[in-house]
Length: 557
Image (cartoon, rainbow, N blue to C red):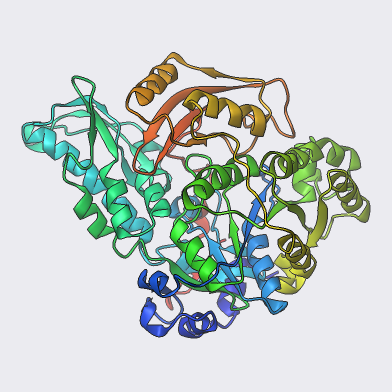
């Protein structure tokens, strides 16, 4: 069986200028990175200003398991299927981060015959966006420490610096460090640390900015530290926003690539949904909506994280309303949620499937009943799935008024997504949707957190540590009461305990800390033991990645 990277490398790629021309992007708006990828100038949005917007299709999933769900693969295959049906369709996806690529998750460009290409470029350096975000983040960190070294005119308390450095690599060794050692010439010693780049507020800001001016304004608002008398210090106070924006001037432009079937794909930005808001850039999504009649986009991890943040944060800020939502599930993963062991998932097990189905059903309830959006379930089909298992999923979903479509895009590409594409098309043809948010802007921050935990996760309540309560009071005092909330929570469970699979009940969510992302425009609530700098597994994916004399990469998945 061919690997993902073999399939990608063996499939002919169209010149990106031809892909752009197919959706009406003139060549003068392209900044080419070789022959098969390009940045798209923001000036194109001015040209497209009067164009009507297409229909937005959001792809999300159940809580992920080691058995696999196939959310990105399904997103790509769905776009290819709509393309096969003669629709003018554009993909809007998140950029992979190198940390997971070399760690445990692997790449994020789909799989099998539903991939975006050039697969290895996208999964590695791509067009340098991640590096630019890291550089802008670390410039700000350097300016903080230099300001203290040079006399500390702002009165920054070194014990209360909240801005961390960033690197696009999983590295637990860097979570908590001490910097500035070995004498006066090397700065002021202090406790320090690193976040992975996708957890940086700079990434969130890039993904929510509407243009360069908005980007600069958001960067200016970043709170980096507090003074000895408890006043916030911003990037603007350090006069950092201009230089940071200069570093990001190209990174803010969406990247244009293609699928294996030459469907246009805008891949741009993408923080993790378990520690940030988990969506690709608002600019890429809005550009796609102007270029296509249908836009397929995805949110990170399960619907409790990615979809909730897409709807409550991105749609609120950007004025977006999806016309349809796709929830991806695999029967293997549902059986795992129902207690089946990983080594037994290929065997028919209706009992385990029935026990695991409530996880999927909870996500369906959230999308249709809480947010008020039409939804279809896409079963990412594996060869071992039996007709009885498929029928059980179909029956239980239809009891909630939601149809099920089989997706075989991994094996068949767009041809394997026709059933799903037709169902999505039918949902999009319904009357105009009205998105309902889980909380209102006027709710207190504490109430917003409780509504997400109780209504979306199914928790019985929320416990706030003394530290979290103190931080919430401070943010209220500073005027951040009306901001949306971004929950940092494990992706593996509806609860904050990754071991509680299925649809847990009678649990409470513990909020241990609350952070402000003033530039991004939301408050981050950290739950459980979630970390903003992952570590590498015992056998990192990096051990399998290699390159030959001709520069051909192998082992990337």
